[in-house]
Length: 132
Image: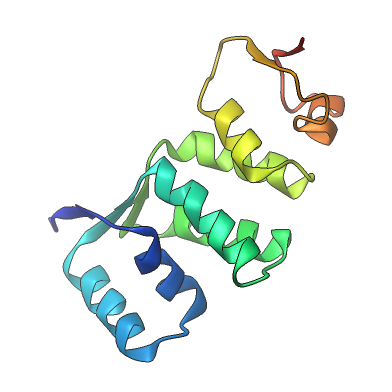
């Protein structure tokens, strides 16, 4: 069994973008030696970097996260919450909002933001949202 190591956002970005070949090869070597743990804060920052700096589309980012969830050598913190957040994100929700909601299962969620996961709320995917 390989050791699990936590990684920073820049490691995941190298994997996603392959924009620095020497660093990408180091990530591949790390993957061969360890399982990589992606915390929810790194998940959040990864989406932000891919969207804002690399101008990736929602579908590309969602597909990348879905791919990460399928890899045995990658462990995402609260994988079910990430899957739920990706579903809402694909429907147009802000990724951070979707992740906030998805990480608070089985409890009411309150917000002032009437646009919060709007389409997912309308389709009944997101529940227990309360608007103040």
